[in-house]
Image (cartoon, rainbow, N blue to C red; front, side):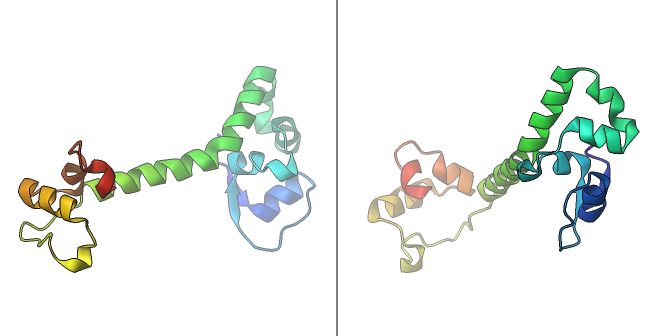
Length: 136
């Protein structure tokens, strides 16, 4: 519910009596709750907007929501990083690539292993046990 409640940063600040920020940005209630420097609590949000009152009845739930809010941005960044690695690993390596081309900046050992293995994707090029650390 907090994740879907997206308001401008200024609207959240006004609602909770915090200093108004200069840039006009939008944040979900969960993002706003996760701003450590403002030390916003779920109880404050519920006082300002009563639809969140039911979530405050159990202190353990309120604490859990606060913890989730604090780490939500970090988890989102990590998900993006994981997805980027997945995309990178799925990159196809051209069948006619010249591993001895100097622009690739590979050691002779790695060039030889790649030339012999001729991996189809970046993922397969890094799965070889002896040369994976050299490639990634």
